[in-house]
Length: 144
Image 1 (tube, rainbow, N blue to C red):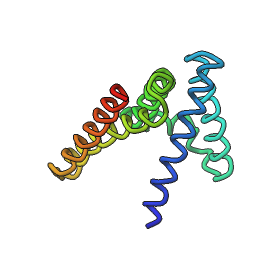
Image 2: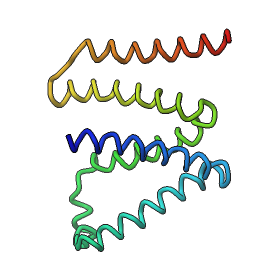
Image 3: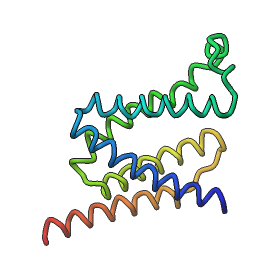
Image 4: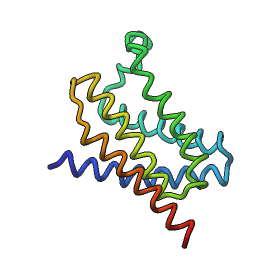
């Protein structure tokens, strides 16, 4: 149950993060708005390292031992942040969130298959129903 609650909290925080970064982009520009987000995250990460006493992980030798694939998360995060600050003002918070969900669900289906050998057509159908709902909403908005 706690994992469900943390997932909901994550969605809540991601939506606030998205809108805050959109506003930062509007005030500071795309590059500076994204940079502010990552500088802030870096300071918070250093504070957590200090608080938890895991400073040895900042040792250059330790950093060199980390497999390069683990740095993919930060690259994906940066690109995603740029997509968010550029796309959200054009689509709005609700539609942007739904479209991100479609991307996340599709990727999670693929990763579940790659890592856990699990696949479900019902999940794929769920994604298509979400897309159908978006299309229906746009059609009603267009006619209304």
